[in-house]
Image 1 (cartoon, rainbow, N blue to C red):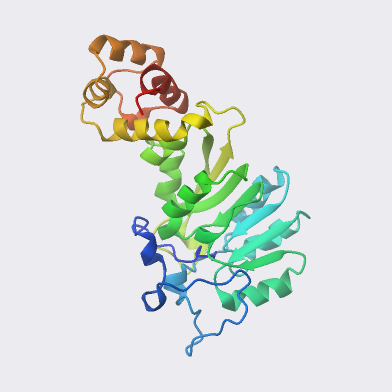
Image 2: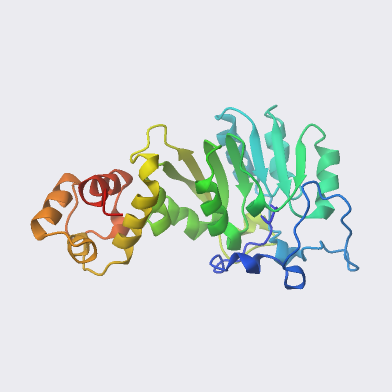
Length: 298
């Protein structure tokens, strides 16, 4: 798992600014597209740092790997793998016989990947600066880069399905298990999030400080909100999440300025209790509230 996908499976640090994603000794450096002319540091580490900086927690759990490959098998078209690392997952993906592109940050592993998988395209690059231009995106993401990578993914328009290993809490929340998040609410009209399972920490080598989760994201064939309204809708969801109130009924009145009767009518159409919280809303309920209260107010 590497591609800046290796910046590591550290459990509680995925809110770092992007400028902190590179080793402190070289904040401005970026790999070229194919990594030509790169040299190792004197201690044999990647020029982008050691294991901790690259997030090198390799997935070796056969049941999880097989589950990911099975999910990918049910898709169609070329596959892009983020952070293949030592190629444990790549081996199964390559057997699907489809065009496969690997995005790897660690220059030490790029050559080995090209030798082991000569039929694949291996790109030496930072996934945060790479186009996700395949219909299927697969990857064992570094825990501390999950949020920026997901934001980038959800802003990309070329993929249809993403099968990702993330930190357990991120996967659970994105799938709305135990309550949704701001990012989930903002993305819900265009994407469906499914939690496919929990991945124990011992499934990685070295063992990280938290379990992983298998998150399956599909682009909706029929968006619940028109794409042209996306920016305004996202502002609407942010206002709902950040407004004060004991429940969605009060939030709509205090945060959006609705009258009590307008709030009651909107909640009735969305089949929502006034006491519900933003984290409790299903995608269809978010879309209903937007149609009732948000359009033109973004």
